[in-house]
Length: 100
Image 1 (cartoon, rainbow, N blue to C red):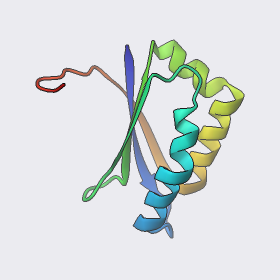
Image 2 (tube, rainbow, N blue to C red):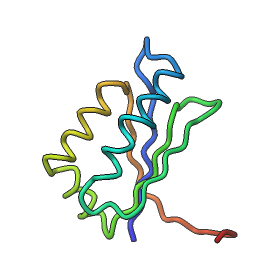
Image 3 (tube, rainbow, N blue to C red):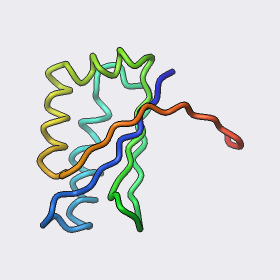
Image 4 (cartoon, one colour):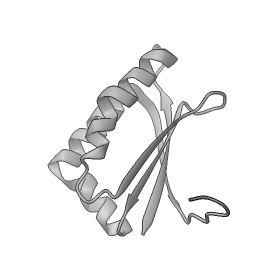
């Protein structure tokens, strides 16, 4: 399984509440429907240099790239750029220490 964490900073002029509403109610359904995505988690940052951190799981890095290269993936990326000034995608090796 491949996981990507995506760090997001909202555009100047976009308020925190506006960002949260857009991200959770408009953007999340688009991300949920990315081709091949296995799991999607959105984390709103309450204090720090970023406004949101999304976690996306795919079968492989190639599957993530293929998802974003698809027509739907391009729509997801365009929607992100409509509200986000900075987007940093990081490949992540997850190590669960305690959890379900």
